[in-house]
Amino acid sequence: MSENTNSDILIAGAIAAFTVDLLVYPLDTIKTRIQSPNYARIYTNPQTGKPNPALFRGVYQGIGSVIIATLPSSGAFFTTYERTKALFTRLNATSSSPNGLLPIAAVHAGASSLAELVSCAILTPAEVIKQNAQMVSHGSPTNATLQTLSKFKSNPLALWRGYAALAGRNLPFTAMQFPMFEKLKVTIREYRDRRGLTTGTIYESGMITAVSAGSAGAVAAIITTPIDVIKTRIMLAAVDDAPASHKPAAASQAKGKADGLVDAFGKSVESTKASAKSMGSALNPLAKSEQRGRKSSWKIGQEIVAERGFKGLWRGGALRGIWTFIGSGLYLGAYESGRVFLATRRGEHVNEEEFL
Image (cartoon, rainbow, N blue to C red):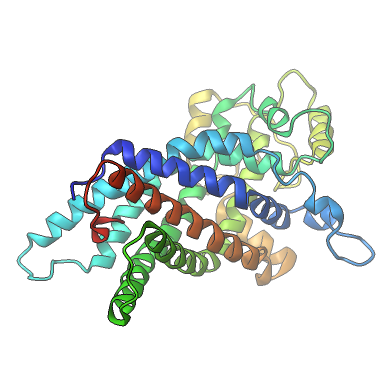
């Protein structure tokens, strides 16, 4: 079979992203709220310490921005991954070693990491908007996404704050998930071949991919939970880099509290730097500088440990593992099924070994 076209990859990636966004978004919203610094104050009963109904309200807040961004970002990821993996595989096969200079797992990890860097650049603004919109009090008269966007009118470059944190979470996650995913998929197919269970249908291909991707994703998600907790804090604090310049600082802070927009550092910060400098700091939240109240990821991690102990770094880990199992399974299962379907519709013979 000839390789899928870029259009096939983009369409299949878009279908997969849209499917996952609709089905698992509520779990992501709940996870964000659990990881927020104001979880105990806003979403738990002060008498019992158990979650209150507010935790489960407005679970689709902010989904619009994610749908808009994940379609191009997922297409960019899969296009980059497929082409880079093919290139790395060819270069690796031409080395002096008969089995290649690098193990195949390293090839998959390298290709997926480069693809993730491209994807994160597109996805970061939507992630910032989404996570702050998820924290807006349900029942607010203004749409949660529009309410969040209004906070960035004076400094839209702050939407890219958290790129390094997002990439810092997704790179190890993807580098772990894809080699495990590829190995699991091959193992399951070989097992079915030995038992004579192989059918060669799109359904079988999708199910094998879904189980492999979900299992690998769940393991990688749980391992990277501490990075995810810190990333959530950084993105929830991004509104401090884009204060409404036409309002007094006190009024902005009061409005932020009423909205449920979270200040990870416990105070409001005025933005006084030029746009170019803001862009540079927005792309480098890991910097040690704490100007304008901004703190490094390491400092935020220390504060979480001081507040809640080391278990605070794993807050939401079980839920993250569950929704990643479902999300990754649906995402890559729908993606591969879509690619097989599009290739088959053109009358091409499908060799499943060429996929992912």
